[in-house]
Image (tube, rainbow, N blue to C red):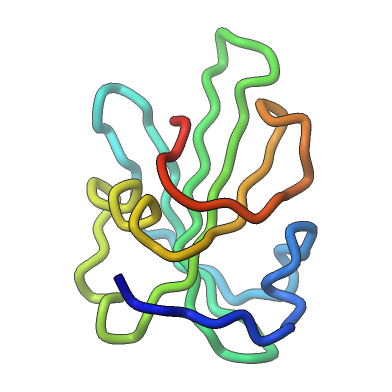
Length: 114
């Protein structure tokens, strides 16, 4: 596990805005039929790279949830939509939120509830 320190940038705040990032779609995680949207985001301020994972189940209200964690430059090329959840579960900390959690964002670590 790569140790990633928090540096106080706005991108670490749970309620940071999508406008603070440059984003590119990595793809859809079809594992177990979850259809998670995986995006790579780069903070416009500190230039750190984040992996962002979003999933929502249309047949269930308040099922939307997202997770984002910092990716080291050396790990970035190894990330695929299919291994994004595993990667996020193994980072030291991540930010998560969404209607499922009734939260705009919280710092967490460990297993993802996807």
